[in-house]
Image 1 (cartoon, rainbow, N blue to C red):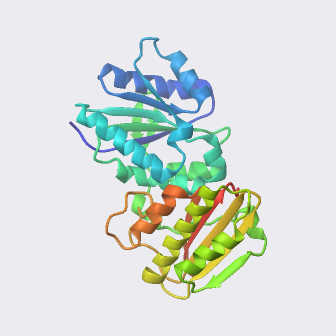
Image 2 (image 1 turned 60 degrees about the vertical axis):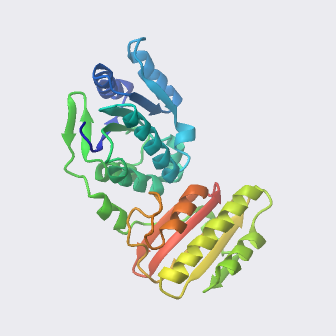
Length: 308
């Protein structure tokens, strides 16, 4: 059994270009007796289904549930892949795409996902193809797609992608943190060197009434963990800023340190590495997490609701 994640991307500009790559890739998996999966938006999944023989035993996954959050997607995929290997699979194929809404609203942490899965799935005999529609995908996203996929999928097979960047470098390189619209206003609360309890109380005091109790509780927990991380492992001063509006909250936690040493922190299950647990929790329960490094230090931005 060969191990290692063969992670490829295909850019397509029409349905015919999509199918020219998807069909032979999936048929190759079926011919080899490999578990073969499609994880695409419903209209694209149906397009692929119609192009395959009616007898094709392909499993179709629901993108809305699978891609709720990057860390949760990695966890779900790892469990799925481990089950196939335990059942004797010598190879596994997945042809998928991220939901369009995630690309449009929260690409940053999905870009980190695309980089991290080169490491996260490397223990499995997996070949995957990620599809991106050039008619609707922004150019900055396509630039990141090039940097996070070691292979390019073509109708004739995979070829090496010369634009690929090692995931550790991609995840540690400074990335711009595009402000959410609500951040254009003055924050409702700003705290200097708060204890976790101070941050928890500030989030509860500013939470809008139309966020659910569960969303608020999750944000309170995540903010508490990240503030504790900043105080324990970062460098003072620590500053917390809170914005809130109809159905949304955004909290930033900034310190003047360099951030976690582990580039996969938050996306992969936390071990005993410094600060790993808090970021893992935040990635599991927030509606968005952005990590940003620049000359002033390290910022973790946590979102509840839909601030985009």
